[in-house]
Amino acid sequence: MRGWALLLGVLVAFSVVSASGFAADQIYVAMGGSSNLFYDSGSSVTVYGKDISNGGQLAINDSVTRFKSVLTNQDLTTQLAAGSLTDAAGQIYYYTQNITLNSNKRIEYGTSGGDLSLATTYLNIGSSAYDPLYTYRLSFNTPLNVSNPNVINKKLTILGSDYIIGPTSYYTTSLQQLVLYGSSLVLTLSGNQTRQVTVEGSEYSVGLLGVLSPTRAVISVNGNPQSIEKSVPSIISGLSVYVEDIYYINTTDQTQNSVKLDLNSKHLQ
Image (cartoon, rainbow, N blue to C red):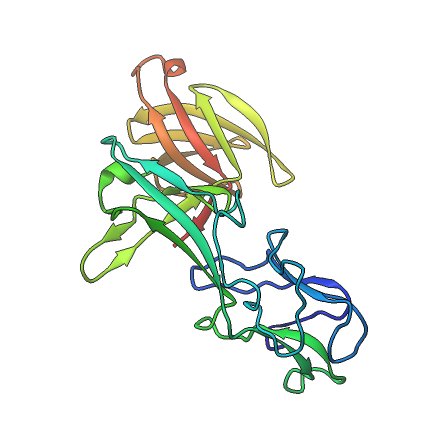
């Protein structure tokens, strides 16, 4: 198929990849009425559950930007909330978020270039990664140097989910890379402590066997121990484990040491 979504009388979610790498599975177009070329019952565009059509109607050949082209925290107070990041030196970076819809994406009527045996109404979202349905942007009020160690493991909230800046992020005049890690569950463990956790429906036994240094700890998942380094993603017994921080206090009494883990970590780059 060519990346179209059938919209005849039902609410359909369609998933594509935006320029930023996020899936657009929370943007919908709802169309009502009969199979006439123009819909007398009206149509709407919904983003993260927010109707941005303001009671208007979409017709054939209308762009998804007919009612609104840029969404801000005034439209989506949670997903696009403004935020701030405080680095290890105490400097505060403020940021905003927005989503820009692509005016090239339109309601069409036809067979989608022969993909369908019968003509119908659909949203043509295309198939090129260089022509996305929408573009997400996060903008800082002052430049953030991701090569600065003071910002490593500091948190950003993106589209309502928390991410931390990974240590392999860098910025030079010729090369730039931002690596972000998120998680399904954040867990803090003391030395010799084991906890039972549920991650996306699966049960795991996660324990801290010991802290070897300020940058390395031995983590056990379902009885399988592994020495892993701080800020380096690892997989133990099928579970993604990211050591966000290590608190190394005592070299002999492991119960005084602890770690902060991000389990089932998500990776954006």
